[in-house]
Image 1 (tube, rainbow, N blue to C red):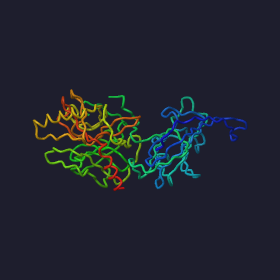
Image 2 (image 1 turned 180 degrees about the vertical axis):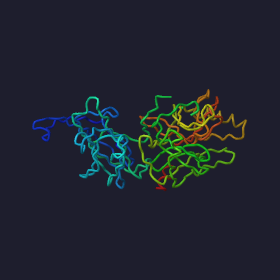
Image 3 (image 1 turned 30 degrees about the vertical axis):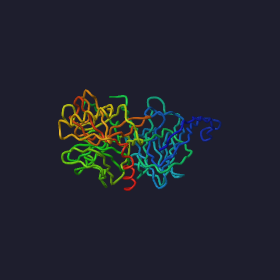
Image 4 (image 1 turned 90 degrees about the vertical axis):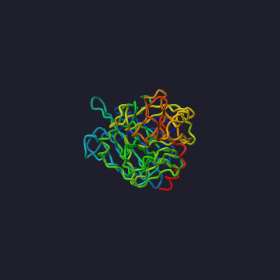
Length: 425
């Protein structure tokens, strides 16, 4: 991903002999030094998008991924002033001197528009050129474009390259943990609210003898709770409604990887190491509604609040058709331990709390994850990026006062996650 340094706007006043001798125009370039890493997904958008773009622009972006990978470029939105052969406003995709495509018009209204199909680069780099004339004004103003790119076959988690390059880029944004709809300032599953499209793009619906979920952490990797994989499972992505999800093809699994320390029994009284990975047969195509969540830093201390989403039971004891979400505070470990031990004194079906787990919830109850939410991500936010702190694992009596939801602490398993990915590329 391009990690942009603070950039300098350079407005260069230059003659254009192709228009009129002596006529001048503004050439706008954004120059920056960008760090090129192996984990590269992102998007490029026209300036001011989704507001109309400006007239008299000439902007270029350089996209580069590691050697051995190709760039897959997908148009999520395109509204550029139409003209014959795109001689007015246009977005041009180049590889070296070869033009892979020159685009204008509206992708959304023309099913045969070339922008409806992804573009594959011959190797690991592409140039994008966006050029506009002086006519994007008045009632016919156009909104521009939003283009998603990814390195095909790449793992998000593993970063093996650390080089620097000088490039020209604008609005190149990390995809991991960057939903197009940010809920950090909104208020959830039990006691929750309906999640807008694009707010939890890492969410994957899982059917495995019951409802559950997984999270996207790479283009071929999903992370979930180990107890979700005790039965044959199907996974679906790309929709916030179950009725729409189950009509789409299930993603084919290449392999399942349950943590070797997971040893639950028929009584369901051991949820330690409740984590598993699913490797898919084929890479996922990312877009605004489908993208990975970031993994945490090592030895991350948890405090504050996080978000969790799901299709599980609601406060009416009904399963949800529409994705719902909630904001929950992390509970102090000692307080959570006392709550669990109180239950264990009176019941024989309650698992112990270990250091590989943490709790979240409200002491008065009312808001909680519940049956059908297992395997989903408890996410937190740092520096505008969401990362997965926990996996919905288990709990005692959803949403009741003094009882909390229990989550697998993902930071404890980073070595295992990386090792599993490395050994199963």
